[in-house]
Image 1 (cartoon, helix red, strand yellow):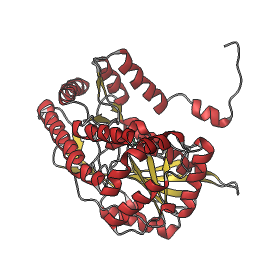
Image 2 (tube, rainbow, N blue to C red):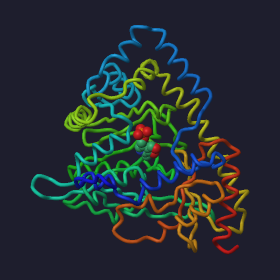
Image 3 (cartoon, rainbow, N blue to C red):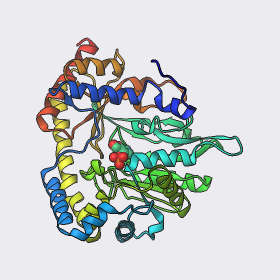
Image 4 (tube, helix red, strand yellow):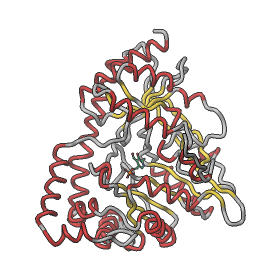
Length: 422
Ligand SMILES: Cc1ncc(COP(=O)(O)O)c(C=O)c1O
């Protein structure tokens, strides 16, 4: 390179090789180079025809109302989000759950992903007294997208889940409350519910216990509700959403079929919302307002929640049941495997006990056979000790079309069998 210069520590951190950035590049390259690739690695929502037609109809309505459309395009929103949207979100959540939210408890961000970048760095990292604090992930494996978000190194402390084995081919993770250490180093607790990657949904008891711990330690509990209730509602078990002053709840319009609009929603105390609002203003002045404009009347009328219950949840439930049946057929009785219980989100989370190769190696073998999955290793960041389990799991998306999922699972079964020497 003839023209070179140095990056700051922040620049170096972003530039870092290895980990999620390389993996995402690899997934993207593989997909662009080969259209025959079966994409079972991403977190993209499915193209649900009824849902897509609702968004097309809403776009036409927005276009038809000249004044609304013009003002949507020509105006910067306030940095916390569109006031009508904030008020509608507060009203609908108060109505559903009996909360007492005001608009000042809510901020929109450019996707929930951006919200996490803001939240983690606002709450953890280096403090003015020189102390360093971390975000506690009480149930590892946890969402890959958090892994590289700290502006400083090592901002996560993760606690391995307890594994409950259920019959021959099933398991479920639980929080290991006995091992949970909340010392002065912990700035906040964070969980995704439903959990990406495992499809686990923390029980009401677990979430209430985490809430009590965080309240008593005066640290926030962040609950990432990207797949949860009341929208998009991709949850196949009972789970009550909670909110209180010490809880930061995040939602997203992405899994409703609008990832391109980049709309995340943060619900929290005024102090945290003020900080997120400032971050929005500093980083981007204002948010993209199209997702807010498209969804606003559906939030006001309650249609968005109905659409989640009546279209989105049943769609993914059917896809999940089919995918699990393909697994049963393809793996049979001879290949060792366990599936995490499918309680929510878009993924099958496989565990191959004592697999002789790592799942990064398995990923490479599958890629050669035109199947893209995500190796489990990437979801176990922040652990203090090495854990064999982290090399024995893969995440497989079932949101793609049925034949892709079916063929992909058959190929996964063949490659896993070969790896075990079967
Ligand atoms: C658990 C979880 N949280 C947050 C996000 C980020 O979503 P968004 O598209 O709103 O940035 C995702 C995206 O896949 C996710 O799976």
